[in-house]
Length: 150
Image (cartoon, rainbow, N blue to C red; front, side, top):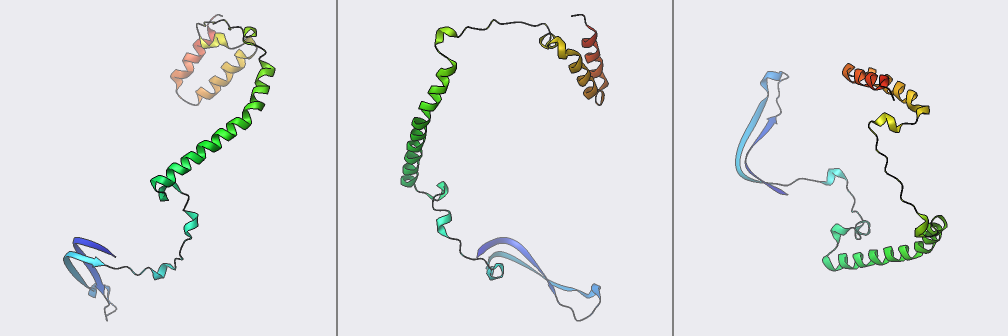
């Protein structure tokens, strides 16, 4: 059941004549109307509460706190069980911190300088093929890159 306020209801009446021009209707104005819908036509069955009882939207604060504690305990247990295998594999590749050297920083003037010579031409060709389907201005800028001396 729901309540409607300040509205109008239109209802067509059945006509005895077969002419479509002779359709009668009733218009009703209302300030407040309590409407009851018959839901039996939907043939709905009662859903089991067990399907939703563990969903966070159905829990009160105490149940949520308990669920959070349970999740945290499960996460800690999982972390503790995984740590030995992760640590063992980690130390296989890293014997000690002194073995790790910092890599030098290399600065490039353009993106193409970062591309190895063996694949540079292929990269430029593929890029040009892709761009030629689009904006012509983009295509000219790639052609300019291709012709620059290394």
